[in-house]
Each structure stands twice: as structure tokens, then as C-alpha cells.
Image 1 (cartoon, rainbow, N blue to C red):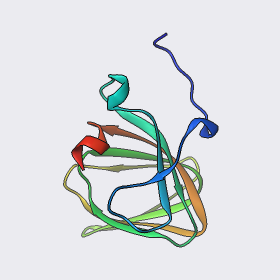
Image 2: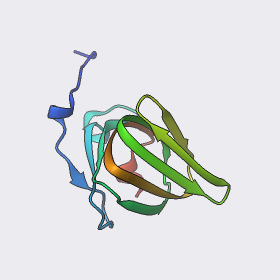
Image 3: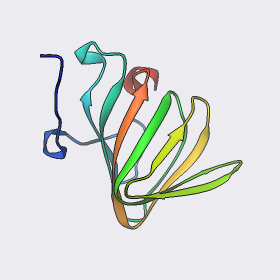
Image 4: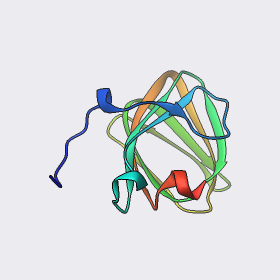
Length: 115
């Protein structure tokens, strides 16, 4: 079957390689499944931050809570129902707020093999 549905309960959350913050990714579809993109859920505990250079095109959909993404151009803050797009090479500081956040994401190409 090529059409699939995923729920948060399907995600196995793990820390992204090389980071110590309480920020977790749960890939549901990635290079192991043969598709061109990675999709999954992200979980950010309250008041966490991650500074990183984006290795892939990363589209983050905020489901719950709020995140801020800071670059040299300024800061955008997104809440539930909003989308943040980050491009390959962007140097970003991603920060969760007092309630943490739950996000969905789509990356192209696969972030695990690009890191």
C-alpha cells in the first residue's frame, strides 16, 4: 500500500545526533522506506534550544505549543497551525517556550543521511 496514515503514537522519539537538549525526533518515513522525503514528529520539552546549520530543506509544522527560530535575519515565532520553512545552509537557533512544543516535519532529502 502506498497511501499511509501516521499518528503521534506511531513515532519512536530519539534525540537528534550530536545534541544534548530535550528535543526529540520521531521519523515515520525516511530513507529506510525508499521515499524521497523524511516525515515525522518532533517533541520539544519546555525552554529548550538547539543551534544548528540546517543540512536539508526542513519544513516544520507546529501542532502544539510554540517555537522560535532565529537566524542572522531575525526571529520568527510560530504557534499551533503555523509552518516554518528552513533552507539548506541556514544557521538557526530553534527554541521552545514554557509549554514546550509538538511539531510535524518534512525534510528533503533525508536529514539522517545528510547530518
